[in-house]
Amino acid sequence: MKKIAESLLKNLKKTENDIKKNAMLADEKYSVYPASIHKLGECVVAVGRDDAARFVMVVADYPKALPEGFDGEKSMLVDGGALLVGKLNAANAKALRKYFPWTAPVSLRERRSTVGCGDRLGLASRGHILAAAKYKVSPVLAQQSMRELSLTGRTFQNVVDDAVFMVYESDYRDGFGADGDHLKKIADIDVALSAGMPMITLDLSEVMNAAAADWSEKEIQTAFEALPDEVKKRVIAEYEGKTFIVGSSKVVFDGDCARRCAVMYTKALDFALEVYQFLKSKRGNEFDLEISIDETSAPTLPSHHLFITRELRKRHVEFSSLAPRFIGEFQKAIDYIGDLAEFDRQFKVHAEIAANYGNYKISVHSGSDKFAVYPTIGRETKGYLHLKTAGTSWLVAVTVIAQKNPQLYREMHQLALDHFGEMLKLYHITADLSKIPALPTLADAELPKLMDMPEARQLLHITYGPILKSHLRDRFFHALFVEEDAYTQAIEKHFDKHLSLLNLEKK
Ligand code: ZN
Image (cartoon, rainbow, N blue to C red; front, side, top):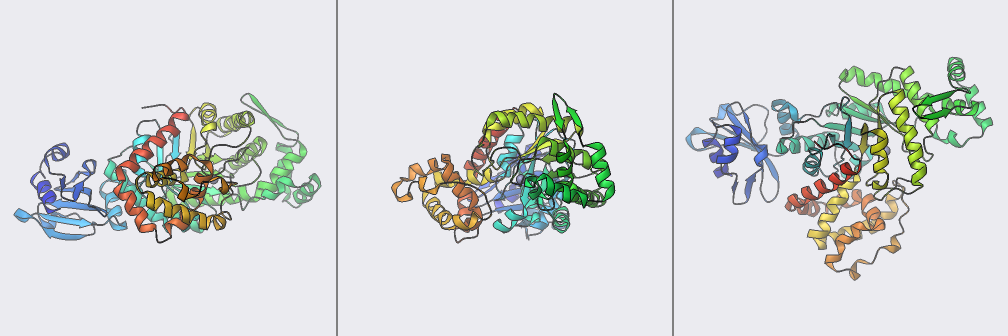
């Protein structure tokens, strides 16, 4: 490492490009990511790796020239030069954000197409960046839900910091988002904001009255009577018996529909206003609020979508995107299950509501790889959309392990089988595990093909938590670290497929 540092020191006065060309960037087990080399005043800051981990390094002319804020071990170089080597920890992520502001997440409310990449491992962003850079799309590189945090043992700060390092290493300057995903409480939103996440996905599934979707008209009428008079008056005046023309579609509210919407959503809409005011007080206009109602069992009818949008606007809630629950099944890890023609018909109305009544992005929470419906989504939104995906990058990692480290894959697979039952409580999927061949019957070379099989994909998709918390954790991360380039290439290829099927414009 000293040899690399001394070579950087010798080239310190040159331009960044000349440093990259002339300095020695690899020596024995050490190497530096060329794109990570940046000048900072009289110093050079870079990220390197050895055979076990990545690290930050800062090289300066003399010890006092080392910039404040970086955390690590300092040592002397020839000719009085100084070197600091530190871990990829919170202090160094903070220092990078301070000295290189383009490494901090930003609000993407003005960006037309955005994609939530979801990196549960903190290792996928490099591939996400390579794919996103080819399209007119802005990536939300850091994105995690409370459930994912608890299953992976991370914090919002870890999630943001991991993205910061990869953005820095990749020299990616187009701006990226960070999403506190599926949050339900102001206390959790506060933690995400404090970690520097500008995007908040507000999950209204618990505060809304989802069960009322199935209530009888009589039950709805009774519950409606209990609402405040001014709400009742307004809902009846504005919605009952009304038809709204939305683009080429008509959305009709009969009496029951208007009342049902009021019963289902009034409390949730008031809570959305409270959250909006909280966000505004913390971040001014520098945030993206996503409203999510996708985690319910009943699909969001177009009339309900329109009601929610109009009512949010009445409350002056500015939001960037809204995630309805679409018709059909969006089970984790596999393609769309349902009537594609009906999906197309309903999605068109959802997209028209967003375009005509609010100017926000339709957000599609894909649950990984709903390629069958992507062309419709791209066409009907004209690219004005947010796509959110999370588990798919984990599955790409599992595939890389199956290719490169069959023994480890076998152990992960067995652990997944052992924990499948308990994870079914958290994730709704219907995989028939008896279709998965017994591992001993498969040769090593056949293992990667399991990740093309819906049942095995679902098995590994929902068991990431138990795997990452098991004795396999360190071996898994090390194996992926060793295969860093293979993982990056596989992620890039996979996201390229996502973005091209959405028909997003290339740069
Ligand atoms: Zn969702």
